[in-house]
Image 1 (cartoon, one colour):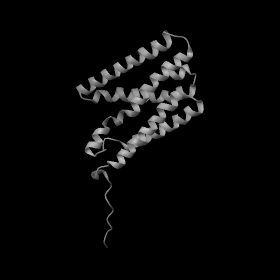
Image 2: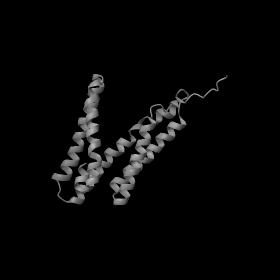
Image 3: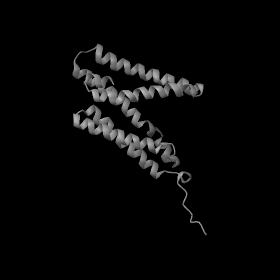
Image 4: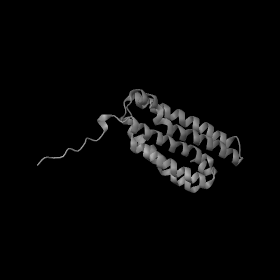
Length: 169
């Protein structure tokens, strides 16, 4: 979101603001339902990532320099890092999927949503000639396709729809 402010891209800001708010709401609402160990791990991870992001993005982009090109570079790189982690996270189980030949951990609707999201932002980045939007979102689109391919290749028998049996009269 900071990147949208530095680039003065209102569409980028207002397209991402609702997602940020919904994501925070869901995290705050659902986190108390997790077991204590999971809750502690998620809280620690969120605080560490937020701290690192604020340190590098905020400090690096706004305190160290007033040069807008350098601010865009710093915020663009931090945004790319976060976005690539988001898109690649479901693939962290790739080796396990290949090893067990079971892709049930990949949720196909989410992979399809990632493909659509990555494709749209890639096109927007190309139109704006903004490689900080184009590269990570194009990569995310490709990773979504990889997830769907893995889901098709390693779909377990129990998840396939049963064949329709003709009824006898």
